[in-house]
Amino acid sequence: MKLKRRGLLGGFNRFRLMLTLGLAVVLPAAALIYVNFSQLRAFERDKVLEAAIHRDFQEMLAITEKKMNKKAFSMTEDARSLFPAPGSDVEEKEKKLDEILANSPWLTHVFIYEDDVLVLRSQPGQMNDNYIRKEHDHIAESYPGWFGIEGKSIVEGLNKKKRPMSFSTYQTKRANGNVYLTSALFVLPEYSKDEVAIGGVTFDACYLEHTFFPGVLNEQVTEKLTEQGGNEVALMVYPADMEMGPEAKPLATCAAGWGDGKPEVSRKLDDVFRGLALGIKYQGTSVEALGQTWVHRSFLILGFLSLMIVGGLVLTRHIVNKELALARLKSDFVSNVSHELRTPLALIRLYAETLELGRITTQDKKQQYYRIIRKESERLTALINNILDFSRIEAGRKEYEFRNTDIAELVRNTLESYRYQIEQQGFAFEENIDPNLPAVPVDREAIARALVNLVNNALKYSRDEKFLGVKLYRENGVVKLEVADHGIGITRRDQSKIFEKFYRAGDPLVHNTKGSGLGLSLVRHITQAHGGEIAVESTPGKGSRFILSLPLTSAMQQPAV
Ligand code: ADP
Image 1 (cartoon, protein in one colour):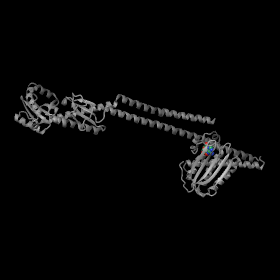
Image 2: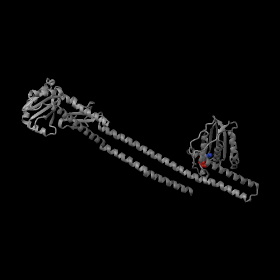
Image 3: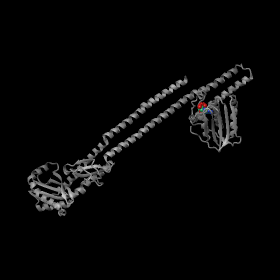
Image 4: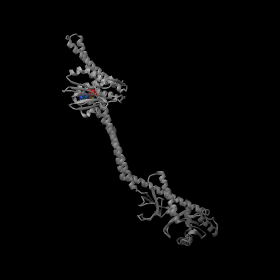
C-alpha cells in the first residue's frame, strides 16, 4: 500500500514536471524556433535584405548626384565671381577671361556676352586640338545669334532661379572618340537684372572624365566603407541612353574600377549632368548572392541554436529526473531506516521483557536470548554508526585517524565477532588471510566498518547457496581485501550505481531485505580516504565479489563526498 502511494506520488510529480517543462519551456522554445524559421523563410521569399540594400544604394546614388552638382555649382560660382565687371571693354574682358582660364585649368572655354558682343576665350594650350578649335569657332559663330534672339528670356529664366545658373551636358567628339561636355550659363553678379549679359564656362571633358567624376565617386566609396563597413561598393558614371551590356564602357568609375556586370541600381542624372547616369553594385559579388549567403548563414545559426535549446531541454530533463530519483531514494531511505531501527529495538525489548519476567528456566534458552539481544544491539549500533558516518561525510566533517596497523589481525578480529552469526545462518565460511603482510597505515575503525558492511551485504543478498569468502593478500604493491558470496549477484547496470548514496538495486529480494542504501557509499568513501579503490565483479544469479585495494604506503586523502 505504502509503495503504491509513493509510486502514485512520484508519477504525479513527474507528470507535473513534464507539464511545467512542456508549458513553460518546450512550448515557448518551439514557438520561438518556429517563428524564427518562418520569418527567415519570409525574408528569403520576399528578398527583404535585397530590397533594403537596394534602398540603401538608391540613397547613396542620390547623395552622390547631390555632391557632384554641388561641386559643379561651386566651381562655376568661383569662376563667375572672377568675371569682368560691367562696363569693361573687350580688351579688359579678354584679359580677365584669360586670367580665369589660367587659374582654372579644368575649364576649356569661357565667354561673356554683353551688348550683342560675345567675348570668347579658350584654353590656349588646347587650341591646337582640331576638335576644340572647331568647338570654339562654333560657339563664336552661333552664340551671338542665339543670345540675340533668346538672350532676354534666358536672363529672365536664370534670374528666377535660386542660383542664377543653368547647366547642360552633351556628347561631343574628340580625337579619341566621344566625350561628354558640361557647360554652364549664368547671369553676372554686378549687372542689373534687365541687362542681357550672360557668362558661360565649359568644363574640360578630360577633367570631368578623369578627375571630377572619379573624385566624387571615390569619396563616396570611402565614406560608405568607413561609416558602415561591409562589402566595398563599385560606382560609375555612364551615358544614360546606354544599356549596360557586357561590352559597354563606363565613362568614369571609382578607383577600384567597376568589374563585370550591370549596375544593381542606377539613377539617371537630372539638372547639371542630365544625359548621364550613375550605377552602383558590390565589388566582386551581387546583392542576390549576398542575400542568399545571409539567409543560409541565418538558417545555420538558427539550426545550431535550436539544437542547443533542444540539448539544454534534454539535459534539464535528465537532471530533474535525477533529482527526482534522489528525492525518491531519500524518502525510501527514511522509511527503510526507521523500519531497521524499530525491528531490533522491538526484538531487544521483547527478549529483555521475557527474561525479566523470569519465565525462562533453562540456561541454554537464556543464553540464546542474551545472544539475540547482543546481536540485535550490534545491528542497531552498526546501523547508527553508518548513519552517523554518513551524516559526517555529507557535512564534510568526517575525519580519519591513520595508524600503522597489522591489517591481518584487524580483519581476523572483525570477522571473529561475526563468525557465530555467519555460521548460524548456515553459511559456508572460507577465510584466507595472508599472515605475512606488512603494517598498513589505516583507520582501524573505518576499515572494520567497511568490512562489516561488505560481509553484511553478502549475508543479506544470498538465497539458496550460502557461501562467504574473505581473502586478504598482497598484489602489485597493494593490499587487497576480497569479500565474495554466491548470492543474487548484481546486474551490470546496477554495478555502476550501487556505490551511490541511497541506491538500492531493483531486485525483489533487495526490496524485501532491509537496508538503507548507505553501506557501499560508506565503503567507497572509506577506501578513497585511504587512497585505495573499490571494485565489484558480479554475475546475476551467481554471486558477487567486492575487492577493496589499499596502498601499502600512506597516500591518504579526503575524498569528495
Ligand atoms: P543496503 O544494503 O543497505 O541496501 P548498500 O549500500 O550496502 O545498501 O548496498 C547497495 C545495494 O547494492 C544493495 O541494495 C544491493 O542492491 C546491492 N548489493 C550490495 N551488496 C550486494 C551483494 N553482496 N550481492 C548482491 N547485491 C548487493
